[in-house]
Length: 134
Image (tube, rainbow, N blue to C red):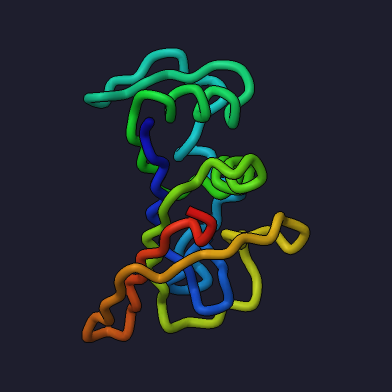
């Protein structure tokens, strides 16, 4: 059985879109991270999944370790299906107030367990969490 790990940058208030500064990323939906139209991958170790994303990732998890960088919509879908095993969050010392959030306001509750943390000289906290139910 594989594991799904999310690696993501967020602001203190949970905004994942442009955690460094409000004008850093003005794209809506992070269309270049996960794709609904990609049919061929040019990156090493790329697996093209079709159909329902959460179902396809759940099937892939049966035999592979998966790391997801960015892609809030995909991450929120996987949260709802209980598929994420670990989180590495780079928490930037910024409060942005608006932008795409990592955790949806109407999302499923989750209990996470801190397994490691370090703070950089710029104040970014790199926190690693495991699923609290595991």
